[in-house]
Length: 243
Image (cartoon, rainbow, N blue to C red; front, top):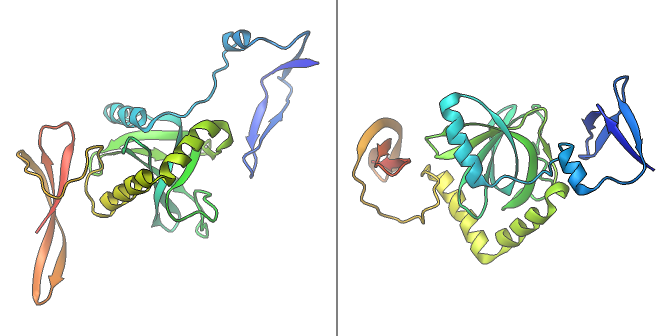
């Protein structure tokens, strides 16, 4: 028999399983036959699909002006995880586009694996998240920003096809080099962009910000490093380190 149930409570378990619970307001209706896919669509059902990092970066820029947030499903490669504070961590996600999403998560002090990566915590790790809250764009690192909320959960089963595509790509020689380049740009504090990285580039623009970072000791000489933000008129601010 086929039943249609409305107003069920949903709860996520520790192994990403979903538990449905009926309450006083739950309505159960027996159906004589299985509904067609068209009927399911007309009832408001929408299949969950991952949003590309291109679309997420665009939405993040739009959100910046309105100071709002939106939830998205995303499948990508985690290339770097950082401990921001005692109870907060950060993961950098990327895909074939070269664009990046910074995902923050609050956790308990003793959490050693805040993003549930298991034993595969080194190198690119393909994973998918549901209901990531996207907020305003980070103009300093030139990437989208997301937060792990109470509704966010990790699951690869609902986006298996996309995760398999990413797995094939990030394990290929091209994908391995691509992900390494993204990590190198993060470590070097160079803006994350889809343009190929080159060692030298002539830029003409306006200095918007100059910040003294640290002193670098080379032999007996001490030099000061500065971070500058430059508007080159290319739609994104250029972040550079100078001495």
